Length: 122
View (cartoon, rainbow, N blue to C red):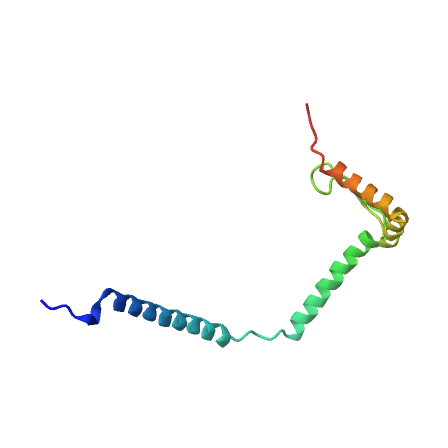
């Protein structure tokens, strides 16, 4: 039998890579065609009104939490208390704490350290 140079190992490997590359580009082209070909329906006026109404309701419900004082006794489910303070007052407190930047930073780091401590029940 005679050996032919048309189908040796190197030729078949190159052909497999070529067919695989063409296949990948064909799949990517088909997916791109499907994505670009789909039409997204426009948002109609009724849907826009509904979204505006829901946003107004959400903002109206959030205003008391942002502008007033309140306390959530178990807000996070861990027995923690969460205090709500108006934004203006919170900014005043932060400004007072950081009049001396080194002391304000130390106080903030101390709060973080206290919060990160593992509680021991021994």
